[in-house]
Image (cartoon, rainbow, N blue to C red; front, side, top):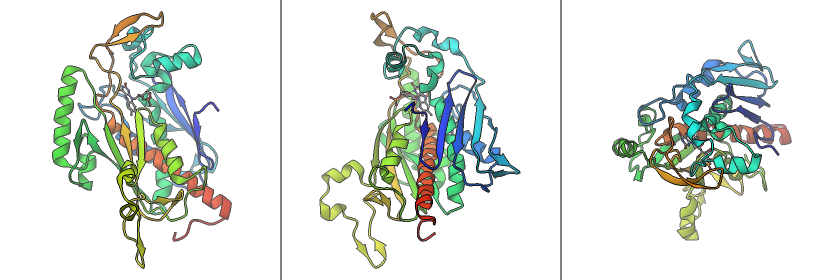
Length: 357
Ligand SMILES: Cc1cc2nc3c(=O)[nH]c(=O)nc-3n(C[C@H](O)[C@H](O)[C@H](O)COP(=O)(O)O)c2cc1C
C-alpha cells in the first residue's frame, strides 16, 4: 500500500510536496447534495496556515484553496471532489545545507533509506505542509457532521512544560497558543519566546472533545472507532502519542474507579472517553495527542552526512518553534474524516443512520 489514502467509505488521498507545485486532496464518497463552498474550506485552512503569530513559522502561504471537481451549483455531486492549494512562498535555497545531511528528528534518513533518494526541498512530503490537504478534506467532513449535530473542539492542553488549570472555551480561538487557560497560555508564550531566542523548540499535548456523536459508530474488531481515530491522528507528522478518555492514567486506576457506572440517566462518568468495545457510547468523545518539539532547530547538533561522516548541523529555514497551535485544526480534521467514514459505514451496512439521530 503506497499509504497516501485513508478511509473505507469516505476516502481521502493527499498529494504534493512542500516546495513542489502545490498540495492537494481528492475526497471520494461524499454523498450528493451537501452544500460546499471554497469559503467553508478556506475558513479551516486559515486556522492552520503559517504566519498566524510570531510564535509560528514566518513562511507566508496564502493557502488559497481551489475546488476542481465534485461540486455543481454549490452542492456535492457525489463524484470525487478534488482540491488544490498552490505553493507560493517557496525558498528551497534554505535547504541546500541539508541536501547531504540528515536532520536529527526529521525524516531525511528514513526517506533516503526507503526510496533511495529524497526531495530535500522543504522536507518534501514529510513537511507539515502536507497537512493543509487534510484540513481541506476535514472541512467537508466537518460540514457534513455539523448538519447531524456533531461538534469538534480541539485545543492545546499543555505546551512547553506548562499545563492548563482552567477551561475557557471562548478563549481558545482568541490566543496564538490555542489554549484553554489564559494564565497558562501567557506563560507558554513567554517560554516559547525564550526558546526562539536560543534556537530551540517545544512540544505539547492537544485535547479533542467531540459532542453529538450517536451511539453505534465503530466496527469491531479491526475498525474499532478508537483504533481508526488513533491511526488517523498518529498519521499526522510530529504526533508521538494518542490516548482516549482516562488514557494512560487508566493503568493506575482501580476498576471501581475507572468503570463508567450507569443508572437510569445513563453513564455517571466518562473514563472510557465515549467509546467502549470500539463503539461510540453517545457520550462526549475525548482524546489527547502528544506533539513532539519541532525537530528543525537552529541550535547546533551532531549528525551524519550521506558519506557516513559525523558533521555539525544547525537547521536554517522558517520553522515552527512550537507546532501545537497549528496542529489543532489538523487533529480536528482527521477526527471529522474518521467519524464521517464510520458513519457512512454504518449506513452502508444497515441502510439507516445510527440510533437517536
Ligand atoms: C502543521 C505542522 C507543522 C510542522 N512544522 C514543522 C517545522 O516547522 N519544523 C519541523 O522540524 N517539523 C515540523 N513538523 C513536523 C514534521 O512534519 C515531522 O516531524 C516529520 O514529518 C517527521 O515525522 P514524525 O515526527 O511524525 O516522525 C510540522 C508538522 C505539522 C503537522
